[in-house]
Image: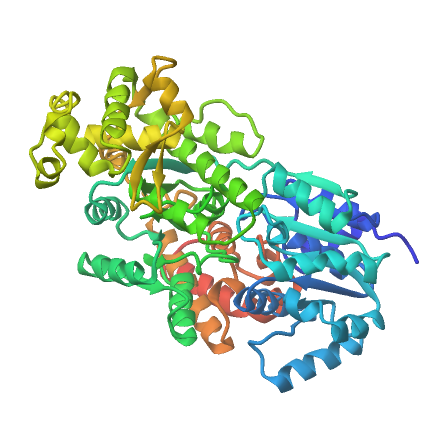
Length: 614
């Protein structure tokens, strides 16, 4: 058997997928697999991880098994491959029994090149025995961070994949993810590869995404103000609960926004309809829980807005990575406050996990809080967590609107004194009332107006004190006692600060960071059509999108699997008049050239003739 070559890989890249060059990192992964190595690849969201195993699957003579966590993700991948002329199948709960049986027969016959399955289905003894009789050349594990118990989305059934090398010792395994810090990567290497694997770690930076974190004051007003600045843009709004998801979608609808909810409590057909509307139409805002997003490949998402604190930096990075995949300006905007910290601590404690995992999860949350409160470039803080060093980015709220850090050690000691003198039994609202000298019913009930600290901080607003308390909690000088109904407790670090050791530098909350876009006189998304030359090009793009949607509906697939937005934009720029010209459009492979060229060429020629363009 001859050794597969990168020349063959380039031929498949062009003939099947319609691209002339590989993206950064793809060739390194493919070459390692051709050489028979196991590979762990960490590549940014939207960087083309799928091609890293799809192309070897077509060059190698045999079957590739792709492990995927979601039925919808498998269905979309299989649909896209079939449209490109690739023999791909999925065996999963989304198919009828008869469809799964038919798919397996095609696999057994040797017709299928890629077979998508969930880890649960793959790792049954019956399936493993059946696969052992076939010529398997590659295993590809998508969303591989799910293997690691230290990853942001650990799934026990994914951990069972670590038995694969025992059953198929000669078959290389590609583990791919966009979200894994060094600890998670080490865990994957140790468990899946016994420490031995080639690593291809690409940069984590997505420089086109503006990063902004804003103190949560009135989240509905803050969201409405932000959406107003992004009117007409596609975006994702993440909420912590299903109820809040529905409420937020209704709120946006009253503002004239085409907003749709998405959460696991909805009927599956309704969820699918909302996802399809988001993927195929312009200007749709999906309001969702974390149930939405994995595998979503919509190029023109202009913003991701978090109404609540995400679960970890990894989860945050993965969620904001759904914005700006076309490389044009996008924004990731997060609101967070002290109640978010309390809620996230509670979620961790409710896991009933072992002490080691609980400790690690609290540290992960601490890292996210550190990102939220960082006084330096926000992107530097984010990428530093993943082990990457960069210079200040110039595209985050801190770089664009620097906030001076001031020495607030005296104020911090007032807070700590108030917490201590009131017995570490009360939450932030009561502590602030004591410091500001408010004669509330609770203050009088406990005679806290008689404390020496009472009224010593009347000159500052409640928002200032609330912000400082949040930063002290984020910095580790205090913690919120979840079991004690949110009472503030002083940590060892806080006691040292209270005793005169150390200092507290306070970063005053910037008010409504989304005003940055108003100051510049330009909305995020204003230049989302920058590659298009004029209004007539915009008109042609709209016509091509409409045609794409019509074809997708007839074939009952998402529109983006027909052609991506990038391909349509390249089509507009090139304006092909015949099949030869159409064949060089980025993203047009041989099968799509055969199946779709006549329809799209007719649309282009009709547009050019109507506008008398040469």
